[in-house]
Structures are given as C-alpha cells and as structure tokens.
Image (cartoon, one colour):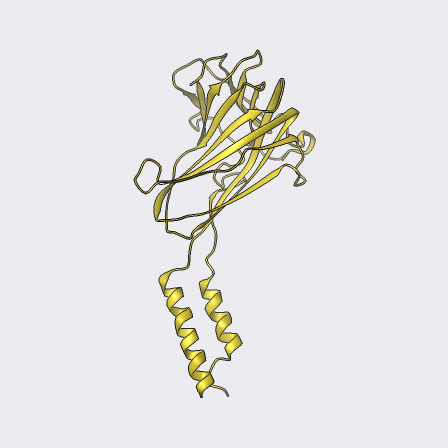
Length: 257
C-alpha cells in the first residue's frame, strides 16, 4: 500500500481545506435575518423620529405595517430589524413600510406564512426612502467576499434602488461601496427581478451595515423590495494556508522520491 498521498489527492485535500463556508448575515426567509420583511405583534414595530402614528394591521397570512407621512422628510417606521426613513417626497399617496397584500406574485405569495411581507413605498419620481438593516456584528478580514441578492420591482410603473454596503461604519477602518442604481418593473419571482452584487473587503472589520436608497422611475408608482440575502465567505484561516504549503512540500518530496 502506498504510504504517500498522490499529487491529485493531496491537492484535493489542501484545496478542500482552503474553502470557507459562507455565513448568512441576512436571509431571505422567515427567521433567517428578516430579509423577507416580516413582523409579528410585539416585535417592536413603531415610529422612529417621533412623527405621526403608523397604521398597523395584521391580515393573516400576510402581515402589514405602514405609515403615511406627507411631504415631511425624516419620518420613519421601524420593523423587526429594519428601519424605513423618508428622504424626499412630493405627491398625494405617501404610505410606505411593509405589506404582503400586493406585489411579487400576489396570488401565490407564500400563502402559508403568517408573518411575511415586502418593503414598499408609494410615490413619484421625486420620492425617495432609505431602507436600512440594523447593524450586524461580524468580524472579518481583507479578502472576505460579500454576496448580496434581492428582489426589486413595482406593481405599477417601475422602481429603482442603489445599495450601500459599509464595514466598520464611522471608524478609521471604514469601507463603503455603493453599487450602481438599478431599476426593475413588474413583480415576478422568476429571476427577472433579482439583483445580485458582490464586494471583496480590503481590510479587517467588525460591523456590517446595509442600506437601500429606494426611488421611483416615473409618475406615481410603488417600488417593491423583498427576499434580501447578504452572505459573507471569509478568507481561509491561517491554518488552512499552512496546510496548503505543507501539501506542496509533501508533493515535492514525493516527486523527488
């Protein structure tokens, strides 16, 4: 029996050790980070900024929480891990928040869920809103790969979004990337409304912030966002790098033998 690994098998072991598993920071399903924008009564639904009173109803199987804030910027709504804040607005239909009663494939929209919704804002071409996830504590290093995906669309004219990913917000070590503005119409879940982005970190970090700036393409419309997923794949641990180096040394020794 050969006492040595073959070159192919040793490389396989080494590269397997080099592969790191992705960590889900925000998941697109129920209880996976609230990327599905659900809320439950008692989960801290309320107004941020002290303006107005939200309209909150629970319509099983699709929960709802929204607020109309007129033309006043700075008003907002907090819903289970996310905050919605009006940036600019002009028009009449000014509600925003989350609602599972319309939007992405409403006739088949997760009918068995009792806590599920999608983020939305009503408005026109002058309306914008910030949709921000609560800050996530996660430590990593340069080379970590962040993969973001989400559904973007509208049940009327069209919606757009620019997304900013920030690591170590407010610190000297801060990293921030704003992905280019994208727009989608419609409300399909067949892939046509799916947006994907990727960022590779350039240094160490300990917190992760994710912000959506939502807008409208033209006229009166309702922009929709749902199924947000943010995963990070850390770089290999130093022990894995050492293993690869050892593997190369053993291969060299085997070849000389």
